[in-house]
Length: 258
Image (cartoon, rainbow, N blue to C red):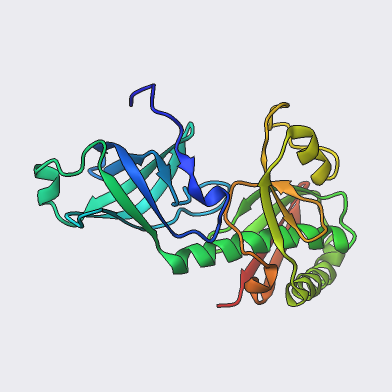
């Protein structure tokens, strides 16, 4: 790839409800696995990352001479790769997918909404962890895929308290969801971002950067690049399915309503 390729502008960063946009093709190529890939100057597609699966959808040129089916999206060093296949194979032969082509982007709305609800539910769980007396827990990795979402924390719960904490967590998260709280997202200077997040930021964020912060209601925020609901009431309800706690790590598994 050309080292001069600029980072892809992320259209969903400022407007997480945005599902359609226009962009310009910078590169089109075929990978070793046979899949086609498009690199654009900007995108409304969320790439897989941060425990969140990628968006899927379609990319069309302005004349509708080709339809590119996007089934996977990845971000590498700030450049977003849209993987998939063109339904009209003739457009590949005729080089109709070429640099400078203007295109429409359409994200699958149902998949985006589900991913946003699952991801937001993980943030609500973080708040409830503190509410039920587990302030010493530090969030680790999270998995917000529909097949078994969970959030992992550094810290353990005594075996005798697992069922009690499970019930307390489920009661607390659903009370929050039922009450509803707005979700705020924005880029902030380092010191201001640290203040919003309770006084410190994770070590992986270099000082001087302006990280993207997600904040629910009046609670502390946290750095996050994912998509979220506008209000946590959109999650509807949440079920804490189980808690595994051993060797200094606890995993809290959850599901949300259909």
